[in-house]
Image (cartoon, rainbow, N blue to C red):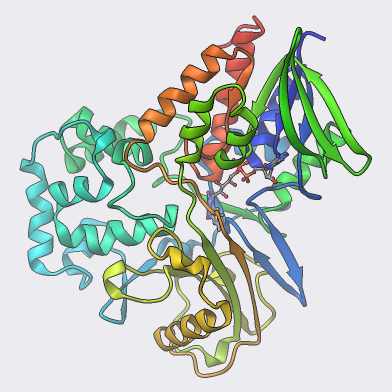
Length: 461
Ligand SMILES: Cc1cc2nc3c(=O)[nH]c(=O)nc-3n(C[C@H](O)[C@H](O)[C@H](O)COP(=O)(O)OP(=O)(O)OC[C@H]3O[C@@H](n4cnc5c(N)ncnc54)[C@H](O)[C@@H]3O)c2cc1C
């Protein structure tokens, strides 16, 4: 037993890590507490509707995605979003405005006032700032681009990606590439222009260039296919309760249908959420538990609704819309699911996925869900000029949805590195490290592979 690896969690982080390690000849075992794989990626079929309860899509930011899709013969299932998805709306004064995507449409746009537009160009003359780890994305954008751009572009964008608050998220931890434009080139406009050229030569795509993808039968197709490939290496209904140090490495104790079991390994990769990892690793290091517990996961309610197309007044020609906090609505935005991908609604129907709560409105944890949904439906139907009743409605509530890389996150990150050094063979992974998106989680599994190679004396990069 030299290269035995146990991975905790069969979300996309755990599964892609297991996939890469297995391919490289390591002996992997994945332990997952639920009775299915995917973690935050959950697709349900009901009465002919396909509802992605977590991510509705991913961004193809790494060639690794295509590689795994091809290896697993999933090309028939893999699908890019309809080109209409390039058009995104932002709500201002109860009107949906297309988000301008080029300088010409920006100048014409009614989303921003003339003053707001002028203020944006002043960015060229604003110098570098202090350390971004302790600067929120809100502060950063307000200083560089002005209050209006913060309110009507960044605030809704942050809600769409993190379900987060711009005043809380650290610009350097949560948006490292954006901060790097200032650090490296001295400004966002200058940096964007210069980095376009550099990006063309790289295999990895930035988020704004990457194509949006899903699968005909929903996002869960991907983790399910990886798990099927790994076969008996993935153990469902196996909740890890404790970890002990043994001579050869670590002993993992878990409960399954047969009672209590354990497995020994040389390396342990945790991809379970920070708040669960804190209980497992707290006995190794109480400071680590404190750091893990400080990572905030706000609640999110995801509402899926379908209507008859003829009842909808708003032209369905885009990705959907996001709502700035200033607009004071009861939800964060809506994805026009059936516009983006096939099989999301029946013939003559349209389906939508709405996001409610997040760090903007954590009260969603305790609100009466029926009343809340009624209020959201009212607002949504007014904005979309919908006259009829929904044909189908369902929801999923995530009490702890997405980890926030808030101000001070760097201290947690540094401590995670220290813990890994002090406890060789344990790696902390998952979406609270290296990025929350599906693409980031997949990219991070390559980094974990390299760390394991180094630890086990194979040539890691
Ligand atoms: C509502 C929502 C919408 C999102 N939308 C998008 C989107 O559009 N695009 C995008 O790119 N990303 C999106 N994300 C983010 C993305 O889906 C997640 O960050 C990513 O899927 C997390 O994967 P993971 O494997 O790191 O963690 P998880 O998916 O959380 O997986 C962790 C796994 O560990 C298991 N586990 C927990 N405790 C134990 C234990 N004790 N023993 C064994 N197993 C355990 C859990 O059951 C789970 O399966 C969204 C997330 C949510 C919640």
